[in-house]
Amino acid sequence: MNYSELIEKGIAENKAPNLNEIKNLQQRSYGDLNAAKNILNADREWAYIIAFFAMLRILKTLIRAEGLIPKGMDESKNIILIAGSILEKDFKSLLNKLDRMRRRTENFIKEYNKPVTKYESQQALIDAEDFVNKISSIIKERHSQLLLI
Image (cartoon, rainbow, N blue to C red; front, side, top):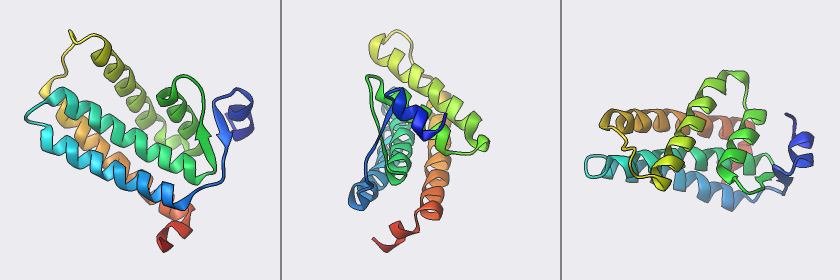
């Protein structure tokens, strides 16, 4: 989907980028990664969820840098849809993985009876670090004015 289709379907809305907001979102994404690392051994489920939110937050950073905001009831799902329209096809498998993490996170929060394994948590953290770094590089590449703040 292109931007106009996203806006027409009520998934996104145009909004001028706010560089301070973008910087704060990006920093918070890295903060989420650190939090997930710190609690991995104490609470693997929450480490998984925080790793997911680190990935989601960096996508929201990219979306805001592009001059859009997610809109609608399911913000997490819409962030992933919008990011799919921004990123190249090379990111399709990563976005699919993120969408699976979204569903897994929602299931865990709603139904605690499906625990997250230690391996899943460790892998989520590895994937999240790689993903956050890749998306941060894309943001810097596409929006060089961010380097000025």
